[in-house]
Amino acid sequence: MGLSSLVPTFLTLRQANGSPLPRVRLKQTDYQTFRSTCAMECLHCNLTAYVWKDRLMKIEATKGFNVKCCLRGISRTKWVYHPLRLTQPLLRTGEKGEGKFKPITWDAALDLIEKNIRETIATEGNKGLLLTAASGNMDSIKNDMAKAFFDYLGGSTKTAGSLCCAAVTAAMMPMVGLRYADTRDTIEDSRYILCWGE
Image (cartoon, rainbow, N blue to C red; front, side):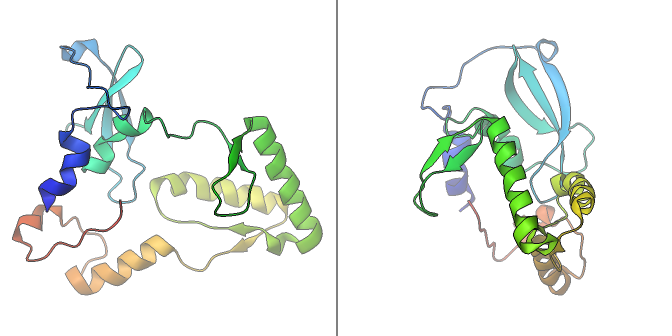
């Protein structure tokens, strides 16, 4: 099971466009290194990125970090250069679900957001604006800024609870007795492993 899930992402030594990965022999000192936090919603691992000639070449767990990074986190090199990665705003031109979009500029996208916020406040009041918040590391940055912004506008509707943390808490407590636990080191002792997602 584990090997079959690794094959499409890890063992195929090809780029997203199908061409083979470049074979370049580099020394550690040839790279620029940058540290960051993984935006995935799991353990927020501390990552080190290796850049050569302005191109992201490799990502790994920062030395001294207390866990191993997962394949989702270290596969960022494929994400960054994937041909289907969005690099500019898209405006829906058809009905929802049709998949019809056209590229627009960032200025046009921000103008449209402003227009829709103003129209919503004018017709529905501030209760028509919904602010969702979660606990991922990107949300930890976004939550306070978004709250300050919507408070400046006069307030907004808030959600009760969180989809991600509420589900994790509901599952972790009866299963392992702890809310925050890294159980990846016990995988080899597991009788069953349930994987979901892409």
